Image (cartoon, rainbow, N blue to C red):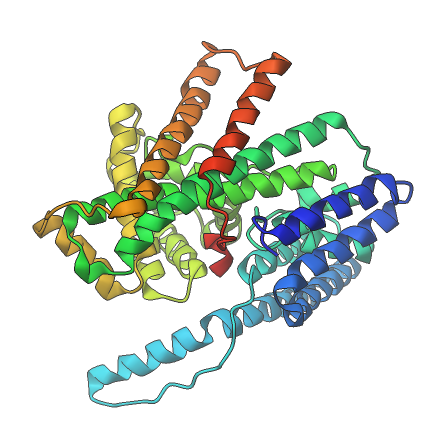
Length: 469
């Protein structure tokens, strides 16, 4: 079920009313409702893949129970090994099997041998990369004794399947989200108000900025042979705001929806395009995933507590794995490698860090360049785009007729978004501009946002970009 669908606008009020005004006296019944609603939410796409969520949930639930019963190092390692193998095994089969078999077969062509790669006719389950990482982190944290295992199976199932952030994050840690299912929740008007505001702005980012920009971006990137350098530059900049608004918009809707039910989940984006370095960017972008890779890949590799060469290798490996996590395509691997190279260069040449508007601009350009490889359909298209930018500036592609409306509206929406985020980044922090406190001003502000959504928004129930990961 998509957030930007009619089904969700029917589903959410029903669950909300049942949760707070019918089943509010019994915590376990509330949790049961959340589990049931979450399974309906996910199963609306394809109910058959609910089995994967259930398998991951019960595997890590019983692994946690087992880890809580033994101090034997060998048994503990075996239990963790079971969790890692099953979770990553499911992810590997459904997401990477065809990619690796085809890459293996293509590698033999360099030696003059032709191999027909085996393929599985499988569909990538929505959100599998997110919920497997969430449940796997639970087992790892229990193994490392950062948290105690839970015996409340209903709360654990709710933690894994919690529908606001089930299919595209934020990837929550058990130490933050799981305890919230153990406590009695109280309906608070301030939570409902905050949640609705987050949802409204999330829909603005998705429907107005991302989906409007997508019309121009798709027209260019889906027909790379028909365009030249300046057009690719324009489309790539628009894509930078498209992917940010699409994913950050989803995160805001998820965080806001969770608040409606009395839950607080982590911030996933913090105005990343105001970062003054690539390292700063990755502290602001997809924070739940960045910190996941930091804690479960980078630090176990040794982090920066090792020799300088090894530290730089750890950075590169972490981003290489991050790129592969995003998709079974060499474009994502190259995108991850490129960001790893950026960070290595910063670590070597800019140890003191960089600040200032010029560095914000340079960082944005570097990130935009990496987005070319993220958005391109394949490596050939990516290098064609780079080559065109460097050698064939050409003329800017301008859509004809009514199609020109999409990029114009997208640019206006991006301008509004940048103004809002500029105010938050530079004025709120400096204390030079107070937040709007007058209720009538707040109502006017959000009324304008809603009007813009209804007037400019694209209501075609387009899928969120990160659903494919």
